[in-house]
Length: 165
Image (cartoon, rainbow, N blue to C red):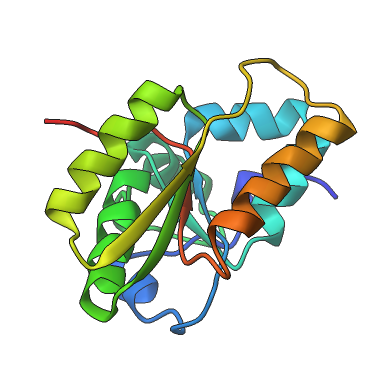
């Protein structure tokens, strides 16, 4: 599957993002870094393209689509942080569960504490995997088991930094 910015289907504005169906979706972000990674890593490129929605997480993507006269013409940048805040506000309104992974236990504890103050109607669960570039099958199983144990079903999974300001 060729990975060309000109041919990608990218959400063009907030209204398209907000009008996505209310169900579990895989929403990916694309910025200059992830685009360049996708050019070198076919599995990453495939993952970006096979999600339910792709949002422009960078002015460079918005401008490049314009200059290339791409199929998608995003009008504005929608960052991963913007998406996170939108989804957390929606989840907080109805109540639900959220799972954070990918950091130290200490940082995850700070995330949980901060999120509890901002989003009191969300149950926050966390998991800190070992810091290493690759996981063997036992470690992958441990991660999957931790997620399944913590949550019957999870509504949001985030492995990005959480701002503590």
